[in-house]
Structures are given as structure tokens and as C-alpha cells.
Amino acid sequence: MSGENILTYQVNDLKLNEEYHFRVKAVNKVGSGPFLELRNPVITMEVKQKPDPPIDVEAHDPTANSITLTWKPPVSDGGCAITGYILESIEKDGDRFQRINPSLVPGFTYVVKDLKEGKEYQFRVRAENAAGVSEPSRSTPLTMIAAPVEKPKVSLHARLQPGLCIRKGEEIRLDAYISGAPYPTVTWLRNNEDIKNVPEKKPVLPILKKKKGGKVEPEEPEVFVTPLHERLSYAVKKGETSIMVRDSIRTDHGRFCIQAENSHG
Image 1 (cartoon, rainbow, N blue to C red):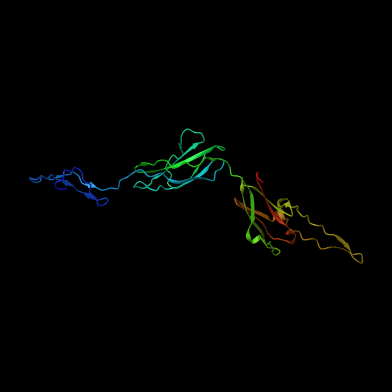
Image 2: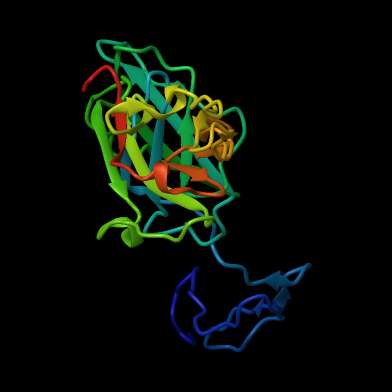
């Protein structure tokens, strides 16, 4: 710099988070003056800026009053960690976006609740770091808030596909998987009748039989069997249903079916 009339200079190749002391003096043809030193050291720090907007914002799985938003982090975090995300929504023909979440969302997914059924919304997301809040992301397309519509679907467990053959006294277990929206009502049938309504078989009274010689002896009475509906149990959770029949007997055989029904089929 000697001999140059320059009042600024950029110092390069400094180490991050280090202290540096700088001083400067003036020089002319006669000689140089005393050094002038900064009173305090300079600490090199990474420049903090606001982050870029989040990317790939999408709206998924609408219900009658909610929707799920997902997004990816911004390309640049502005030189410091993202502290969270701000979600905004606007109703169709609305005049401005409204903030959804009162506190920052730390992750990349959020279920927006308390939406109006039958209304259309757009959504966008902002990122925040120590330097401030980013510009908004691209808005999602208008999305209708409505319960999903799906006809019921039923599939049997793989082990039941070829049919079921068991020995007397063993447990009959039938498992099926259910889907549909709204979630369907499930009915198990045996020989086209609701299995819950299978009539109870009444015990047969012994029949008196007259043998030769005039002696009357009763035949062997029929062994009483616990009715099917008393040996029947259910296991139900969303997406799955099962029936179990304990202490099976020959008369339990038949064609077992499952029927699922909702407002769409």
C-alpha cells in the first residue's frame, strides 16, 4: 500500500472466530508517521442473513376440517441455523394470508386444523433464523377441504386365500383388512346370514323307543353343544377385523364372507 492514496483496504484469508488487531500509518516521501491502532480487537464472524424461502411446499390428505402440509428446508439458511417455520393460509378470494401456527414449527410437516369444510385454501411457508424471517415460499394450488371419498375395499389374510380347513375342537380364525372413506361398517356373514344372528340350536329331547319284548328304553340323548354365537368373539381395530370361533364342531362349517359398506358403496 506504500505510496498509494487509498483510504480502504480489504483484508482476506482471515480465520473464522479469531481476534485480530489492526493498525495503520501514513507514509510520504519524507517518512512515515506513527501507527494508529484500533482500540478494540476485531473478531471475525460469519455474516448472518435471512434464509431463503422453504421449497417444495405441498398440501396432502384433506379431511372435513384439516389438511397436512409438508415442505423442504431452504437452499440457503443465511449463515445460521433455521430456528423454525411459519405457516400461512388464505381462503379463496381472501385479501391476505393469515399466520396459522402460534409458535415456530421445528420440523417439515404440520397438520392444519379447524378449516372450513367445502372451502378452498392456499398455503405457504416461511423460514426463520437469528437474522429474521424469509420471504414466503411459493403458494400451494387451491385445495378443497372435504372428507375423502373411497368405496370400501376388503382383502383376506394371505393364509385364507385357498380356504381354511381345521380339525374339530380347534379355533376358527378369520382375518381381513378393511379400507374406505368414510370408514365402512363391517358385517361378517355365514351362509349369507349375519353371523351374530345364527339361530341357537335347541337340544333335542330323548326319543322313547319300544323294543321287542315290550321294554321301552330311551335313545341316547343328543349331546348339548354351546351355540355358535356363544363361542364367537371379535377383534376390531381400524383397518383390520377378525372373528374367532372356539371349540369348533362340524356344524360350524360353511361359507364365511365379510361385507363392508359406507355411503359410497
